[in-house]
Image (cartoon, rainbow, N blue to C red; front, side, top):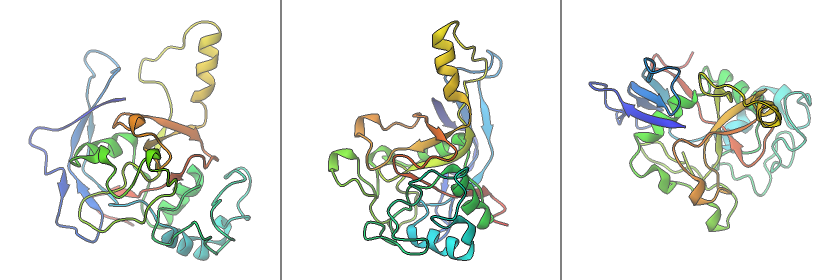
Length: 247
């Protein structure tokens, strides 16, 4: 939960010179709601590349065909729960509700990370994700997606276009950031501190909002979180990398 501001003198937030590739996001400043100290109120975010859309079923299908260890039914229980790739018909077959051009859903943090690494990329940090989303005009409108009020409850096919889409209204997107308290956080005494503390162990931040999320819950600063093996509530993946490109 915080506010993201583009740094003064930073490059254009979203470069339009990569119409078929990832969006280039300029450097910026992340200001947490609860900074580490009065002297440390800003976190610098360096320029990076972020894919314009989430990973699709077709892209993920190509990945598991090349990497059989990540196929449905073959991944150890440590890395996924029982509903991994729930909408697929088999290890290398899409189901009727898994459109090739729609975002892949029901993937865990482990499998999302593995997909990124296979592409020579990585998951974005939550600060990177938020600064990119903040630079897209009208992002909370859910371009290329829809909220729970639509009653569709399935992500739409990824749209064509230059700027990032489906940041909201399609899938929750895994990040590389663990779900921990803000710097300086101290657990409350007694039962409430014990209760809150258990949510800050092996939990990873997801950003955005899915097609099953009410519109009223969508905001730039919302921090969703799930365990690393979970694939709950339309979890998906979007690739990031440094400006030098993918390995």
